[in-house]
Length: 395
Picture (spheres, rainbow, N blue to C red):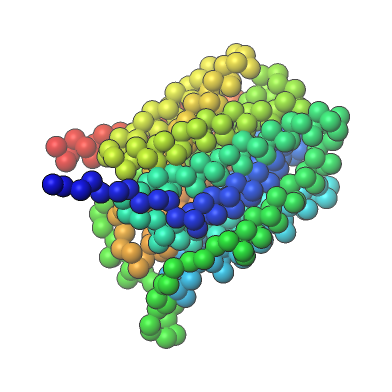
């Protein structure tokens, strides 16, 4: 008589990391949902400037991850880097409401994203360390889903505060400070990491090129698909600008991020669970198909309803793809070098994010918003073709 194998429970530390992500994303997305309007409407920045700021900031976050991930492997610890990263992000939050120039906003955004870069790869590696193999996709999906709950609540709070303050963006941005510091407190009190052997060789750089040869072809395929994916997925700042262009009032513009985060949150955890039962590339392909549809809808939208439908599709594509990509990286790399693997993945994605946001800003400013989104659809289709080509070659 066979005994059914019991599915392990999601570890407590994964839940704590989920709440850390929730509070920090609440803070960050409250800022992010208003920042394009603040830059363009209050400080007089152009769409190209917004693209450069967002591209450099997001690329910096991803590039820094290669160092933080490798260092976490080298020192045999993740928590200290998580504290540093989340702490820098928390310290950046008061700079936004104090800003009186584009340069100050850029500096604050850069500090915030450096913090994100420092914490990102060690956090993903810590999830991979803690998560039982049988439910790895669910663990990544849960953390990602709780992250997006914060991304939903942040812009929702921004709407309430904008309506209550008569549209005073600087006043509203102050409310991002408290949840950021709550996230830091949760790490201090609630996160315990498993024993992790540090590097045994002394006086050795934690960034070693020879490690890259130990990664499989399957890993490098994931990196290549992730790069094409990132070229297609430029900054969400352009979703906000598109909604304002169509006619959504300033107080209600954060609803763009609310809708995106809602559909992201609703899909991230189910997609993570499904990825433990079916081939993960199917979900990744579905995410790319949703992104193509989102870009086309946003390009063709003539009403707020059309924009919101495109934003909802954008949120669904995030839910189907982000946790799945992280799980694929974890699946295809050696246990002792997962921090480095996530770092390299994010380095390549960061360079593509910089290029994508600059291209999006340039296209918007000189060729119009429709061209920006149609170009995104083309990049998405290329990434989808990479997945289909691999399946065709394998068969």
